[in-house]
Image (cartoon, rainbow, N blue to C red; front, side, top):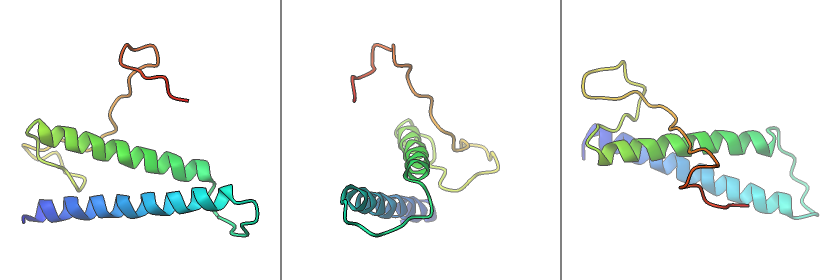
Length: 100
């Protein structure tokens, strides 16, 4: 396994742990008798997690297209792309789904 593959695996593991903590928090906040107090609002946690998941999805799509997976912020070396958040389709796009 190469260094990049190890770093990518660590990235996946980190996001998996954060998703697990997010699910536990959702379950905790859904319980009326829960006494846990959080320092960061849930909306901020969701926004940060969503951005990180989009960035991971973009990296996976790039990998499938033959790009190297930039697991660290590169200095725009040849052959690598800087990590970025992918563009989301507009709600009126024909590929948009009806999610509520």
